[in-house]
Every structure is written in C-alpha cells, then in structure tokens.
Amino acid sequence: MSLVGKKAPQFTVGAVINGEEIVDNFSLDQYLGKKNIVLFFYPKDFTFVCPTEIHAFQAKLAEFEARDTVVVGCSTDTEETHLAWLNTPKDNGGIQGVTFPIIADTSKVISMNYDVLGGEYAFDNNTRTWSFNGSPVDYRGTFIIDKTGIVRHVSINDGPLGRNIDEFIRLIDAQIHVEKFGEVCPANWSEGEEAMTATSEGVASYLSKHLN
Image: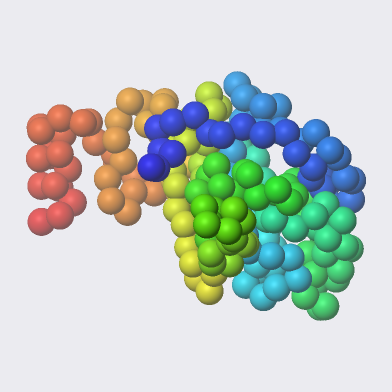
C-alpha cells in the first residue's frame, strides 16, 4: 500500500548529523510543524551510484532550505560506517563535506515500514526458522513529507537508477503552490508558470492555451 496521503512512519534511531556527530535519538518529530522533509533511502555506504546522489543532494541543500525543507538520508549501514564514509574524501569515493543527517537503519525496521527494503523475511513452519529472500539493502526510495507529517510524494528506483534531484525541488515547489493558492499543478509545471483551478472550466482553459 502506498504511503501517499498517510502519516509518515515515525522512528527514533541512531544517525550522523552535521557530517561529524553520532546521535542515538534522531527523529523526524523535530521537524513537525516547522519543515517539509525529503527523506531518501539508498542501498549502501562505500558504493558507486550512492555517493553521486548524496553529493547532488548536498549541492542543492541551500535550495531545499530556502523552501523550508530538510534533507535526510538513510541506509541500513551503521552510524560508524556512515561516519567513516563522511570522513572519506570525494576523490576516494567518499562523501566528505555532506552536512545533512544520515540515518542508520541497522534493524531494517524503518526500511520495511517505508517499503523500500530489497527483499523480505520468510518463516518456514516446517523447520521453524527465518530466512531472507532478496537483497537486504534499500532501493532508492524518496519521500516528500509535508510540515504536518503527511507523505505527499513517493518514488522508488532500482539500485542502478540514479535520481534527478531537481525533480524533488520542482515537486516541493508544486506542493507549496497548491498549499498557498489552492490551485493544482499540471504536467511539467515549474515555479512561476501558470497553474489551474481543479474544475472542468479550469482544465479546459489551460488546455486551450497550452496544448493546442
């Protein structure tokens, strides 16, 4: 079941913040009523596509912050592994210089609650044992959560498929526009462009002007 339109699953867990400090009580609750959230999951530290995405989020961090939005990363690696990667320079494949929080979902509970874990546990009644089918790391899941804690967007990529960070900025702009003006945002809409009213007259007017 999609989480869109539902409360984002909450958690309190270990994380690395500011690129250097391990905390054991990180929670999204601190942002409720204050910030939108882009929560993104990635497969593993010390891999290949992952550092390109993480640096791309960092490069756009000021643009997210200008929209009252925080960025939070998550994988199933430990806090210590996150910290080691954060202390590794870019030219060695590291993510040194990244400042947004990175969550350590070592129990995989967060990943399962957000339905991004690349596999599932199975119990064999005959042998009374548990097994795991698939790869116990995250897909590239991205969740936009509004200030009230409601999930407004979900996208999930397979491991080899890197994300377009600008698209999440566009979606946040659209969410902000909808909240501010009560209009809806048509296909390929970008900030500053005309939106439309959610009526038959509104869509007819938009189509006649833009798609003829």
